[in-house]
Length: 351
Image (cartoon, rainbow, N blue to C red; front, side, top):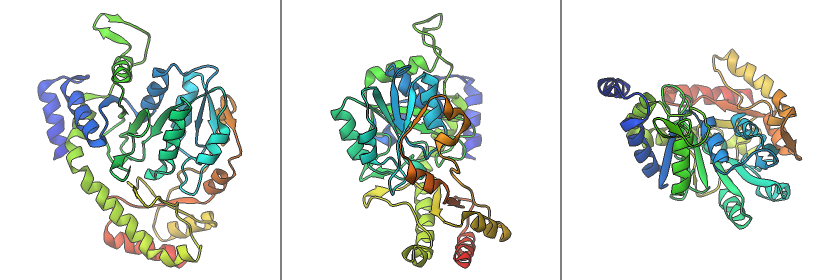
């Protein structure tokens, strides 16, 4: 019903590009994150790309990021002409702060910190280090909308917080959509021009740019869903805690592992991930019992074909080991308590 109401509202006023729906969602979402400015764009990838371009990052520059992520965190860097420097992860499966410091060079212009699966690692330490060294910090919050440390939400630590509202995200549109948070008014002004061909008015453009606008229909859908989003996050947390409780003995016996979490992190659980050494056998066991599990992601970024062109790889042993063991279990509003009990039992049965 929420989606039908949103669709009807847009069809009634007929303003399908930019306009009141996008502006309304931008206001509501910036308030939700606790950041002064927010620009809606076409996707999470567009958000990362525009954040980099806003700081003139390009050929000859280096951007440090994680090898354990969806490819967009690296492809956005490559599309600017800059080089991606892959840095290993820690026990949270987010960037390892100590390894990051060693990866800094005179060409380092930015860090893209991915809050993988919704978890938040050393963002406070990395934020302070980037400030001290005049390095741009971009948070990739595609999987971390609503995650926070204390009361400070993901997307409000860095110079930019980049979000995806893809249908598989926890705050989901009915198609592609994304956005960028910032506390800098001039950056926000530039982003709103850059997402729209560089238009300064209808008949002129101040620089060449892409069409990376957020669709008004998607903004309308998101505006309808946002007031109910906290309920969805609490549901996911409840499901994650159910799994953790059921698997406690397996975790204690180190039969399975779960990513570490800071004590003060609220985890949005875009995915619930465990690490299993016998992954292939485990996936088959679950499939034989009618349960589909996924791997996010089976390859580190350096193993992708396109990476041979623009990626610099440091020692990423931890990330490579993790990529061979990670498995995502079902969760979400479509998963009932009886489903959770059945899934948990079959996980335990395997061991």
